[in-house]
Length: 276
Image (spheres, rainbow, N blue to C red):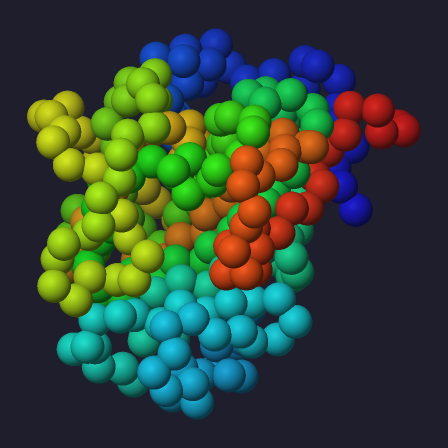
């Protein structure tokens, strides 16, 4: 069931949040969710991985488990693991079921996104991120580069499940970079870099801001915002759930590949003409 549209006052973002969105391209809502919400998502995702672990799918950079989840193992060859999830980079499509779906379609999250995109919104992608010890970060990029849609921009919603620190590979963002165009993205040239990553180079990153977050904090960001993640140099995992929302009725500008179609799963969240 999708969230019912509340009255305008209850869904309105604060003036500070709107100012930050327009000026910087992001804002953080501290303590948005109880930490147990993310813990439930992590528990369900780990159970899915253990039901079909990467060691049962040797050599596969991307494999399916269950009805809808797609699992991306780490590409780095030097990983050691005591559990199957220690070998995983991302799990796609958790928004289609369970605790991750409940959060994605919740009225509180819909209120935030609708305040930026309007009431007719869908969630079209989700990723549970396992930034395990030793995992490399993702280089500077813009999410809309990966979303070739007719309606721009999209909104990213990033829920911290564990603490995000400089040591364990937090995100960094370039405030105000959302006001430009989508930059050319070249290959990630690091030897052994994770498959599928692309990189924007030649940036002045003097003003980059690290996103230090506690479990339950929510980062809301514009899909043109330049951002990256750091390497995890800590002894523990940095976990997060990331959702991407767009306007209902959005269509791709070109045919999607089978791989794209498998992880771009549009799900209604709110409609302006829903009955009360």
